[in-house]
Length: 334
Image (cartoon, rainbow, N blue to C red):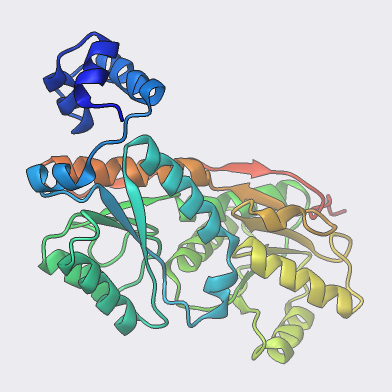
């Protein structure tokens, strides 16, 4: 089994340089770190994490907190699997492992996070949702545990680092795109009226519709409990295009419309968000916004690593760019 001395000899550096590279010491240049890491890979060197933990007090593990899983929508959202995979890849590049915290409710989730913290199973956390008055955030702030949030900046925006897209800009861009394709009556579909991401996108929708002097429609809710009401509202408002909160809701909406004999994009143009694996599952393929999940994951890991290394806990809001992916679900309206 290779040792630190073996790695040092292979890389042509001192054992102390190898040791400091393992701790990602900023005094070591990136060129030297890369040389040491290449030697580790070639020799198959595996750090003694137990010894590192004793020396530094760090677990070299990052906790990732999923939203409460009682909601079936949360379980089936491809976003979470995609971002978990991307976070794990970025963590591995930084010699970190990932531990996952889940719970059916916020109360269960808090208990799980408390347990992970007390048992020192994570040095810090990445929260994959953003809610107001969140007891998980409150606990982590009280215990002074480093964490970042992937999601819209909420009630703790001056104390917490948030990584997100500009959801208001996304909503505005969706309206602008549909308007440029001849649509003058545009609706906004969500699955609830309280999520911060959906509310920010709807806010952008209203701002763009107002600027373009288009009629602003109320949020239309698509769920098993609101089908009859939604059908009446679509008949009442008669939009030609619909902006849908995310790809999964859009896919289910298209299926429901098909069952009603309503065609997409001929009767309704549809644009969505996330560019998930669902976007090309069935025809018409979804026109959707790519929210750059790889970059969201990379920035969340890098921001958390920065908090773990710094004694100054500075909050910030990091905005990740997005890109429109044009497919089949939008036609020019004449």
